[in-house]
Every structure is written in structure tokens, then in C-alpha cells.
Image 1 (cartoon, rainbow, N blue to C red):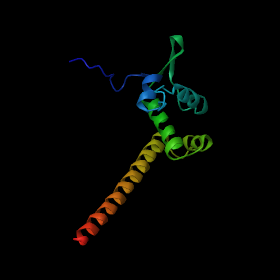
Image 2: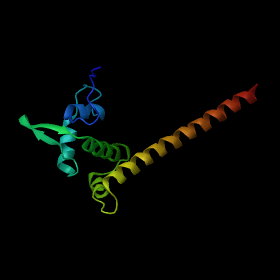
Image 3: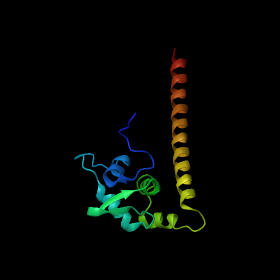
Length: 131
């Protein structure tokens, strides 16, 4: 059976990475590949292979780094300098930083969901008491 999807270990183009990270202009639908190119210049940890025609190919590790950078910049609201400090921290590895970031993000989402469930439960209880 042949799959249309690339194997997980395959390198991806900048367009594929941009789509995966949802870096798409919401109004025009244009891929924001320039964002990834800018981050490449800012963060030495992103090292795509550049092949013929100046085409960039990103490994899974590159993609994980880019996802982590996006998370810190877009969701945590950090500055580029702040992200650089985290990525260059000698006391923790990049993999540790990424894992911690994903864990913290998941914890935050879990807490938000728990609070929403509590609020909904309270509303349901209040509605029951109205009867």
C-alpha cells in the first residue's frame, strides 16, 4: 500500500513546515514562509539543508525547534531575545526545553479546561436549583 503522506523521518519543504505550523495569513491564505526564514536568521538552532535552487529542507529536529520557537513567541508572548536565552541555556538541552515547553503548554490547557468544566457544573447546579 502506497501512502501519499511523507514518512515521518522525511525532510519537509518550507511550505510544508509553514502549513504544519499554521503560519498562514488568515485574510489572504498566503503561506508566511518569510517568518521561518526570519527565524532561521535569528536562531542558530534552525539548520535546514539548503539544496539546489536554494530550496530549504527541514528535519524533524528543525521542525520541533521551530514549533517551540513559535510557541514561545506567539503563545507565551516572549521576545526574540528571551527565546534566544532559553535556547542557548547551557544547563538544559534543547530537547529538555522543548519537552518542558510542551508540558507547560499542555498543563495550562488542562487547567483552563478544568476551570471551564467547574464553571459549567456550577451553572448546571444553579439551573437545577431553580426548579
